[in-house]
Length: 523
Image (cartoon, rainbow, N blue to C red; front, side, top):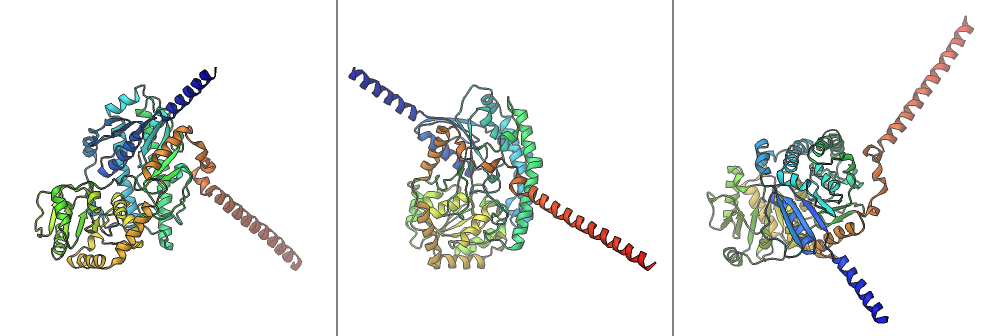
């Protein structure tokens, strides 16, 4: 009898362990054509697959290094790029660099919305996506990139799955309201305005006006537009209002080492730096070039979306002249076959393994556009920067690095041989820049758990706890005007005005009555 009980107990324990280790089915939606977006999305989904889960990813890229663990399925929407480009010719981003403040924010907002609306619709009507929507597949969670593709949140509703948002950047007003995270314009600069954390009165005024305008724009145009996409392309459509605020988890590509400390509600988790991999061996020519650079190496890259070859000719020539005077070697990500006027100390490459380069001990300075991935990687490896920000979040990241003391901002329009040479001397000769970034690097690496492990844990947590509704803040039920007390303020103002009017009417009445009595006495 005892043997049977022992065997039964063992069987129950065994089945319990098997049940706990059974992988979840997770859909990741990362439809953007920017390589940086794909790196973040695919790295997250591969981490989940390697943790033993059954992962499906929607993207325009084919993964070159599929995960070794779990199950990996790709739905590649490669044909959407051509369709989008027909309606959305690629803008000259370098020409937009001079805009600032509200004018920059407005123009960038319209640019982003035009592009994201096209990407959303072209992705949803793609034959492969329609086949997926009409299939009998089941998912436990859907992870959506939080970048103005609101209609795609209907994937979660369609598959009866928990909705998880992934943000390429830190908490911001594009996503805070979906989970009730505080983002008052008094202390939360709008991401497209690039204002410092401590804003002046005029900056707070601009920030407030821009936030109000954005809130109205999204609620009156963007969300209704994406609701149309949902009704048109999903077999069993629901209203977008039932989707936007039904978020179980937000994964933020941020950390205190690279951005200011910010308030986060319980369902928001920072995983910044999760995409960084251990350094790999460099190609032989690059390894030799870096190893032999006894005076050090300056690494120059404008990222994956911006092309150095598109720089204005006079700017490029000024940069080359400044580089030609350096004792250090220069490694430049240059997308063309030839770099006219290239000095002997400059080596170019159409594609360069940035993380592995920054990890090399001889790299002393990184000249960057200030993209967030580049910012995270340079902080992790402890390399100071000169930032040439162009748009998006680049200015915010660049000026943040300058305030934190590990970089200097060089606006594109101010580049000259003399200016660049002076900044190179300043950053390379002053050890404070390197010391500051190495201090930030220590902070980034000082974590209780690895950021990827943290991401996997919280995704699994949400699935284990059936959406983790206990993490939702109760005031999320308030509308945006209730959240900001606009209805209360309107009521208070109305009461004050009514009281003032009543007092005025009453005073006028008694004044006239008294005046009439005085006139009667005189008569």
